[in-house]
Image (cartoon, rainbow, N blue to C red):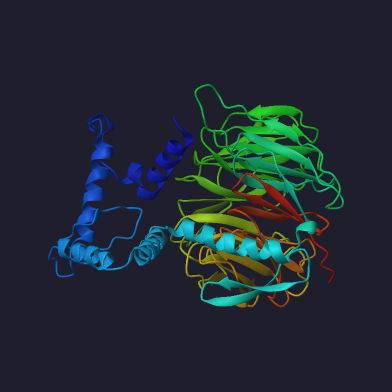
Length: 501
């Protein structure tokens, strides 16, 4: 089966909760039932377009389409338009038809096409001006203009080779190596040159062959251990693999029965933890490739896991629950409840004192092991909060970044329960944020194709790089002088930055 159909099937089940809430018996479903109901839905949509607010039917002869904006017209109105056009001279008629065609094409553009046009306009400005690093240029940003200090192409390298979108990346903490994972069934280990004008070596390609009769091959998550000697990868088909930095496959682990969405190493590097759509979390021993313990606590897919210390960790799920567990104990140490929708991400702060969580309920919460209710709740985002990150080196306070589908990032002073800055420049959902290791700057990546670099202290936009497609992940290296950016159009960009504090 085509992987797109499998993704659609999973999302259909997830969004409709059909498996939990439905009394449908599969043996009673007739062939062609889905097509039948889709056709009924299309008919309903068409009827909806041709009904006035009072319920009266509009008489319309214009063909109905789901991919273009519909304008109802009667036969008389169409005839009037044709007569008006015939009154013009030949040249005028030609110009008129061209104008009408342009308007028609514009009306048929969906949101993605509009974003593409906006990106192409930005790219044309960028191409003509980004030869100089410090040039500032005005680019149309919705209804207002924003000055962008665009990153020069001479400070960027592009890593080509993946054949599908690149979902994840991870910097080696010791060596200048970057691991990337893609929908093409491969992870790649790149040696990143010291300077952007140095040649880029061919990467080590880690092939993830699916099981027979399985087409799922997406690399959904990957991470290096603390010493940078081992790379763990998780895939959509539920397998976990352990590799050396030279690309040697050590173990393939098959205990999960569905996609792995999260993978984290403990600080010692002897254990790593995975969370899966099969509702379970598993602790793995990196020296043997064996599962140490499996946890079956959640009633829905486990979306994220994170270690508190070498043997204690937290998990979150679409079941709206958070569990804190310890190796060797079958029951959780504590359970956190309070979110009203699925929980996307959880993160322990650098001191492992507080746990932050974010949810589709548009809130972020901060939890303490001393109580089961959150110590603070941040409610100011207008749409789902997709990801969060703690500032890694904040001396004055604990700073948490929240990134939302409302196109904004917010920086929070957790101890004082206040918002420090609202970072507004993106035009679409923000998928990824990353603090540099010193805590001075924040990188953000969005579906608007932009990488933005922000000052944590002032909230000021420092630099911008405009790419060619949606951004799935951004990540600083350990030295804080490079940012890796994963794009949906199969490429990875490494941006070289010289941001002295």
